[in-house]
Length: 251
Length: 265
Image (cartoon, rainbow over all chains, first blue to last red; front, side, top):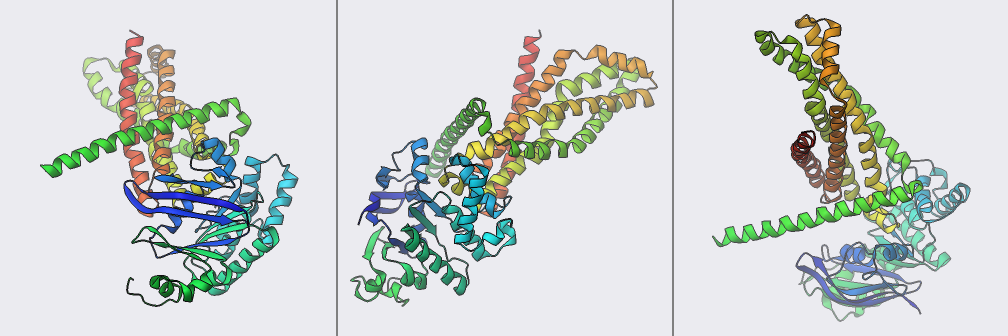
């Protein structure tokens, strides 16, 4: 399978404080890849490095062969068109309707006509079953709907890669399961590569093809593989305990 | 002693890092303004009008009232002194020149810092907490172009207009004292005011208002864009935008007053 994201000897942190180092991994086309680890280990920070919001202390990150770390502002914006991001809070703009939240991107980066933009926005909202709510403002819909609307917005430019930061956080079990089903649908229908930061085990076992486990103590990746296998076969006791929700000596 | 040296070193480095960040911010905004001049269709005119309405029209009432009262106070205070020397008519000169050259632009800038500067900081700080600025960046937007340029342009347009209104109302306040308390003839006070204020004084007022507009918008936006991602951070950003805004306005006012005085001999 073709690799679409490559993280090479990444070292990241804040100021002089190193959070993670020697991170090496590749993500393949169409894979649902989960970044996993205990609270505060740097999962979201890693994601923000991968999408070009933070500059690493060392190392490189390539998206579809283009180095996002070394790119200048203009090139970085071009690379960012290759992926969509769903933020933990949804990050929808409160002063705009759901449709406007989608069309604003199209207005900025495409030459589409108003009619085409409306059609594209409705198509994406229909994908997440929110087409009837196109004129609603984010404050008028539920948390689960906001997350789905954020997915629709992330899909606006038909990207090949989608990043999700804690998609199930704050959702009830049914909404979380619906969101998992939507993520699987996106992969099946569009062959989208999906990178997720989460520690919702139920979600991981139902959708992830592969996980990496970050460890706060060693500041490295301590496991990489299929979560269903790692649950019982990982050589690392802490990983087995984590995936089986058991109290561990290390914790 | 070791702790003192260490703390001094940290603050010293912090000062230069902040200076570098501010310089980089000013450079980025300047670059985006030039981009806007070259590509006017890329400017968010709808947002610019929205901020013009919020920072201009909505502030007119309070600006008018405060400047009128300022002129009234200045008129009363000076009338008491001038009456002793029989120079009542010069109240018109004092109020007119003080308001136009100094107090008008300064009072309007103070009001705008409290209203617009803090609002910009709070708005951008909240957007940072809600990851909206991150979202804009990853969607291919230039946050400075999308979020800051409309605010800056709106302030650059409305501040001179508000200052002109403030100047007129301030003069009216002094006029009220002159005519009602000092019993000066209506036309004499008006003529004295017209004689006292040169058109270059009005230009000076407008130039100050324009410079203050840039300071208020830039400080508010800088504080908001650099606020920490929590509720306290937003509060601190709003407070510091007002405090540093007022400080910079006073510094700029001092410099501009010296420059204009020198230029006009």
